[in-house]
Image (tube, rainbow, N blue to C red; front, top):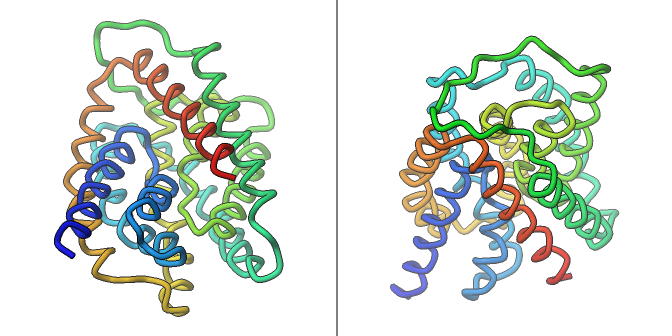
Length: 256
């Protein structure tokens, strides 16, 4: 039993650091890792949701202190993403998840390859805190609306906070610098994780001891991951992120 919870704690450490580093809650990574150490299916899906909330919030505050949050992106994403998440959670009783997982895996893989092949961040040896830009792409609000609704639905259907799609969508579709995309993704992920947490808690799918142990590992390392990302070269960070997304996309598709 002690070894079992030690494994859960180490998963929390990994998920927390990667979540803070790459701007996502981490539940999409935690679920398969928990399954590998023998945590039952529904618990492996649901327990990471409340566990990632405090770490994600702390990491988001670190980005906010560095003036990397674009509040208009955050507000619009929450306003339209939360209802879509609730709808997605409700639709799980009618829909199968396999087709959605395939589409998600293809999207994540495509984003990963795009960051590797077509990087947009320039080499810069000096780490500069990026101010929020007022330069928006065409049909900016429509793009943001579609991102929020689509990823909100996926978040509800797959019982995660959607951060593994939010950050690359902000970077590629909204043309945000990579660190701002991470910052906004973390802030929105905190809120999008709440409806799923409430539903799964009501259904009895959450093992609160596993959630607690995950949190003990993830919270401090989420902060560490955010600090590392903020102080890293944006161009190097983008390429590492591309590798991580490519691996995650292949993993998604391989396990189906």
